[in-house]
Image (cartoon, rainbow, N blue to C red):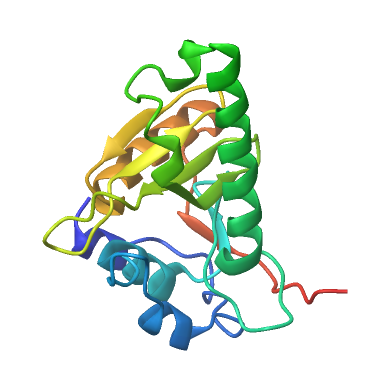
Length: 183
């Protein structure tokens, strides 16, 4: 999947963009000084907040007062992921980094999407490409590490295929979801 394919994502109705914080989407900087990967920015602008491929919730940066954003939920999921992997390394559970990872990797992985069955998509933030992209990894229930591609453009077809295996082919790629305000 390339940039054109993100633009071609079939969104059911109108994308939910009203609570997306575009200032953060365009202005946030990671430790390396670079911003969000272009593939992620394109996905958020096209799809907004919603359920992708019937299963995945890609966390956009959201305005203050809203739930399910990259800043809050993504940070919480990242910390849980890293804690699970620190514990796994202490326990010698080497299967947790299989089939594609190694123990140094989880510390540089950051959650940007979660599935409704407990899997997460992560960026490898220590390995930005010249195009500004981060490699994309999947952790299935914090028990494995699968490298899905050099960027979200490469990863999306694999995510779609796995979702279709589980749920069947859907008439749309993204189902917009209502924004939820924090309590």
